[in-house]
Length: 277
Image (cartoon, rainbow, N blue to C red):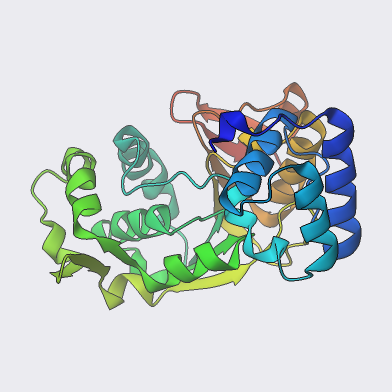
């Protein structure tokens, strides 16, 4: 059975599932983009061989641990080292010079997935001699994907795949400077890892008590409707220092109402700055 062969959920079925999950588990998918979420539920039905929406419903009702282990099937995690190298060049050339003047730096990678972006920024900071004064918080809804990120180990074939983007950003550097390469794996070196704290966090409903100089949230809001995007953007606005930066993904469309919260620094690389009220 393929995802296409699973009968598409109706709007009523989707509403029933998201309402049940919210009530039973406290995980709120009610404002996720419907088409993306329907595809996620279809993947879940296929992978777990549940046969239909009814089978999925029964599993959710009977097994309290089930949905907590299936977050990855509902939200596709897309990340890679130095994805879109022009973004990291822009950060290096235009944002890093501003951050250099700060006594300490705090960064939040919201929806960090398996961690490649977190470690990419660590390399950027190390290259600018700012890693030593930086603390980074990396969060995700999925505990299993966070475990991968914390481990910081990737198949060496993936690192080879990422090497072009890496070399576009640092043409004279070697991967071995930042990764221990052995046994078909590439492990992030400890000096890149020690400034990072990993934590489970639900953007939809969890508060954030800390303040940050930079918030990354790339290719996460593509799953949200306009109302939920604004809710999350208000959280980011509140969590940023007055001169803080927000960096989103190429496919994260900012609602018109966000213009009251953030000004565009660079439209091409999707870098924004908090508007202080």
